[in-house]
Amino acid sequence: MRLRKKRPPEPAEEHLLRLVADGDRAAFDELYRRTSPWLAVRLRRRCADEQIVAEVMQETYLAVWRAAGAFVGSAVGGSAAGWLWTIAARRLVDAFRRRAHHAEPPVAAAGRVTAPAAEDEVLAAAVGGEVGDALRTLAPELRQVLQALVLDGLSVRETSVLLDLPEGTVKTRARRARIAMRRALA
Figure (tube, rainbow, N blue to C red):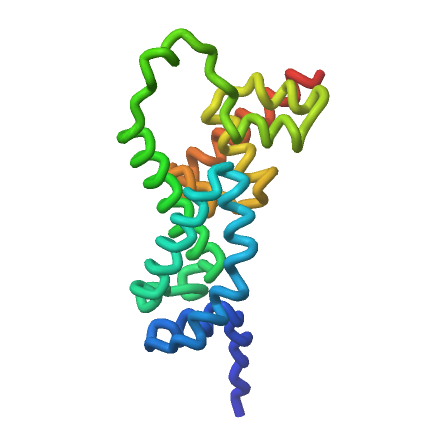
């Protein structure tokens, strides 16, 4: 007699996504209730503009409603949370691109000193002292990877998706960033 291994239970969010794919509105409402708070926090870490965050949230959940059937989940090593974050991160990048495309600096602003980026201000507030100074000396591409992996707590795969980089590049930049940080703090 052969014993079959029992498959571990499907995480709640993945189950909800499968129900949403079948058009279950109550499952969608529950998925939103469970995931929107942490998703909004993650988006606010990347963007201080509440209007953009609200738009990205709306676009993200609209995309989830429309494409829940495309979610393959743990079959390929993914998770519902990772899938949601991937959609939201891409929507946020799109929002930044739209804003940059439509924004034209006023003539009077040409000679002014620009304010630091919102991410740099958050980084300065979150990480101060020598470590913060060392982080600010990193090249932007290294700082982005280190911020996503360490401060945001993303996996290499999620960072790869967020920054639209191959996983190997993320690992290489993370290694280079750590080496540079060690030198700066030595």
